[in-house]
Length: 287
Image (cartoon, rainbow, N blue to C red; front, side, top):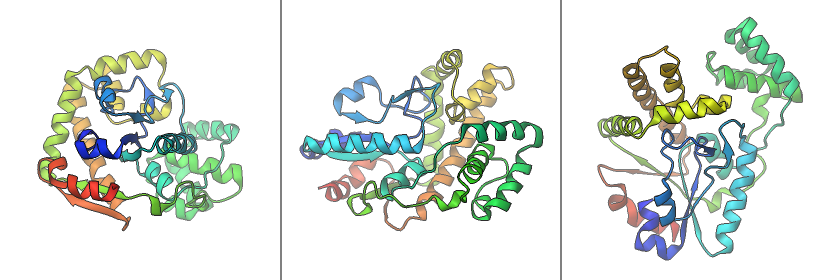
């Protein structure tokens, strides 16, 4: 945000594209650290508030929305600066993905089997049908396991066969940058972010969303799942806050590991002020 509103950013005509899988949902503002209305008046933002939190939103839908946004920006002579960190969305942008379809009847049956058989049994089935995909998924990650089985059974192809393919936006046109904080600084920033989320009314936001009916994907978002546990009496507020902090730290570690596997990413170690410390290099990559 600060880079886009700097003099150099304005000269380049930078506009921001969110690649956060949860910022696409309307009403999920505080827990996703979505840009405020005032921030959106300073620089144009794209790919936020695309669907209601009651709706599903797929990577395929994101790819289409992303390409439309990029075309819009370039048609006006601007530069697109992507911000966020949903690994699959980044991969869809950088490499393009050949995305499988959906089979609602298969999905409904698998949802029933999850209840009767449990996630471990479904994970074992996935390992038999697609050992590559099965080895990369935790047995407890029922949402991913069910999706992989849906594709295997619906398409007749291994889920892992749907990988980099259709080149929707060539990698050579994307400069990838990642900022790495010292672990102790990152931990403090996470604690502060969670505290601010609570002060700004995360609980009220979740209560309002529950009256609408959250989609299964939205319900799994960090911070929202834990607040639902608190609202429904299964967790105290203090426990919910502590759990959000711990899970966010764990997510940050997994996120770094995911992106460390990509040698095309330019990493910058920062201490306190990312704009002041790396702005010249970032502007150089964008120019």
